[in-house]
Image (cartoon, rainbow, N blue to C red):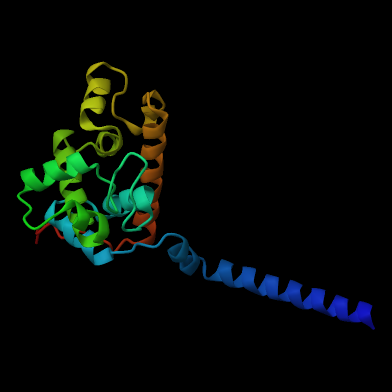
Length: 198
């Protein structure tokens, strides 16, 4: 009797597992959206629109930096959902003419952190002539460092030569951001920026 009950339980568990796997396979889009969410979607689109950036890139950087968590402070002291160093954040506030923005608001409010981070990302994007890979590298390693690599011939700023990036952390960072960028473009094609073109 006990053996029959155990056999029955195993069969029920097996059937439930098969049903769950079938459901996940059939609803793989749902599963993908669950695994790769885009939080603060409206804030990302608005900030991307303000600075003519691709929202998929902004979302990918947020995913890699903090996985959408506010109040995170890195070991090096970076703050906000887009993890800016406090000195960089102060420079952005001053250069961008942001009033009523504090380090505390950058750290604890996703909308403020995204706006400030998008401003900085746009600044880097312009500095590196629209090259997404050098922009991402500069976001991680700093623009001065990336300029030295480019001028010294260490790296040509292309994805297919990323193995030439001397910092392993930056090399890995670029790869992760590009991974999420491509994943978000596939999963959220409607996450678009309005360029104002008619």
